[in-house]
Length: 381
View: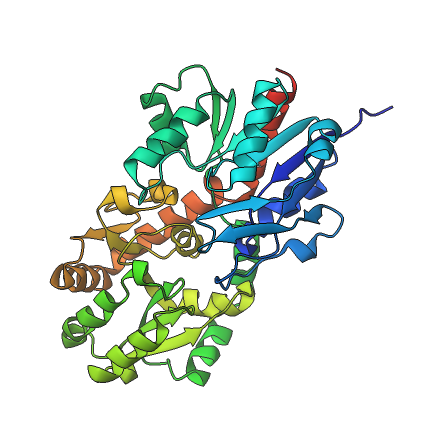
């Protein structure tokens, strides 16, 4: 008779689409029975969420929040969570007050709990981060975003906790499968149909928000066009900055050299844009989109201020996976892009190395394996 599966509850604020590969793997694993408690939206934010794709594994809870979830409370079934599950994994953002209360209760009453948290908020306020770290110390099992965050917590005195870096990534198998669907002939036809046949493409893919500083790319474009007049910057995504960016492109007379693609979430529809591009540009704080670029073998151009980036920046190696430019320096941004576009050999090496990173170190399967490791450790402690 096979042992009963381990019952695991995961308490989250939302379930974004980019984490679908991770959910698929843990839901299909026969050794665990996973239930996620989550809300169905964040008011004021247009997010692609997938909670409704997993009706057998997800329980949607009511909530209240203020200012795009600067502070919030989920109406969780506390008794059910505490009594029904072998291990409870709680998102460790204390701005979600219900999560803070639940996780603290579980730890104080010696229940099996794993704190899923960001070790270092790269744009956070130092005093509040220090308070969050002080609170995090009470937990024996901590699941963070990257191996680099494990090192960060160790340097902050987390000596006795069992800490695992998930190495946050995407469903690389899905990306590789999508790549195989696009042979050379099909890609050339796609480029011809979309008026891109004789162009050099560079790509950005993220929400059009002020924090991404896409206006720097627009300001740098005239300098790039002096060297590569057939260059087109392709922008995938929508957001509050769209009208401003479109107006700036028009003001500078760059309409022929910028393509606003809009929102695209289906991987097979994203694939030709990535495969047709030579490199990926993200001038400000980069996060998971870095791994999306790496999955297609695209080198990244981003600023070198590591303190502003999200945890996924740990996968970036200047000179090996792309190049840093001097933060907010338009001339240097253009210079670095021109340099890499002119070096086919370096781009080819970067393509191989970035895909190796995405396939072996940062992806949904690595995340799932490390998740199962820490919940089993917590259960057996």
